[in-house]
Image (cartoon, rainbow, N blue to C red; front, side, top):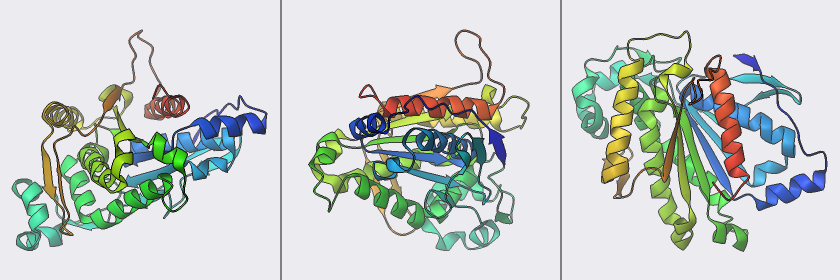
Length: 307
């Protein structure tokens, strides 16, 4: 899928760009589902336009989606897409029918999804989660080793471990998790992604005290012209779960590889919701435009200590 998005480059001076990049906190941005992938692609185009390839050492992008199709945009620097196996990871191809037949041997999945598994369409989960939140969570559980490994590797590198980067350790790490609350993949996986990051922070010791997680969730009005019976129920369920954990915390879960995650903290330090209509009544044309706007806002927070 290709879209055309204008990317402006305000810094012509390379030294000025390097100074700005050096002042940024080490940052990991995770995209969940299709909307998350679009945000990361737009953000990558912005980073390439501002910093060329120099941003890679200080910023990491990870997108997890239940489709092998990558989003592409045409910017003034050329065609931009996420790199498969490094920035983009397909967590689809989940054998739903086989899991249903052998659910008693999948204790972690049965504990989280047992009551609803029989209601899901049988087959293999490919080409997105079809606006079904249980599919989004199932894809993350099934691919947990890959997801967890990529998150931990990214945080470890950003923490400067093995590089004696004292500045990084004093600053901590900013993490953004972005996706829609409307569909299946992002809506079903964002909370678990936040707690996997919380769990990974514990390996950083005192540095974890300076780490910060921001969530960005897209609401239904951003999907102009797109309809589906689950869009509003998905959003309501996602917001209810988010509100419960933001207020009370107390998240406990066991993953299929045996990892047990327990946290009394809220999943996010702050969570933003974005829609297709703003407070002044201004309307964005479609979800691509909303995601591009959200990506620019993420960049602004990355570039300032306000974030």
